[in-house]
Image (tube, rainbow, N blue to C red; front, side, top):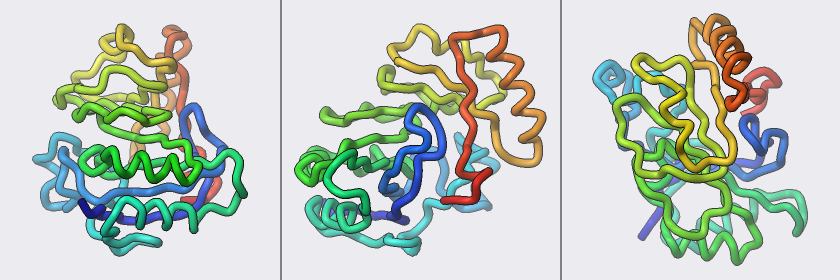
Length: 210
């Protein structure tokens, strides 16, 4: 199969358990919870997404005919030598496209593979780091991984309902937007009295990197 990529670039991971690490970000186009068009946002399953995942016109983006072609592009974007290679596959919803051949090709190129998913699609075998960010009213198919990152607050979503799942880390990430300061205070207050949860801050937005 071919792969539709919105953008592909070298940066630092800005959030979660690998924050601060150099990584190639590979953002796939498309999502199963929102078309990405503003006129559809109000009726989408996820109404608060802050990412542009429509089309293939971003930095490094395009249609890659084979898994090897995409792995070669990821390797070309890496600047850190042969050690600690990390690719973060995100979206949109990356598990609409990530498959076995791509996982094999990226591992062959020496990369650990992290994926950031909404959890509505079960992850294929072979991924090294799974971050699930549940969305209200969306069924959760992927119920284990390295981290669960809940955007907070979401109407009708109680963080306690996720604590029985098989994740190594539980993060609350304040919802971005005009109420970010209030949402951050609310997330801090929740973490203070529910120490299973940690505060996740999108540091890339504060230091001005993608």
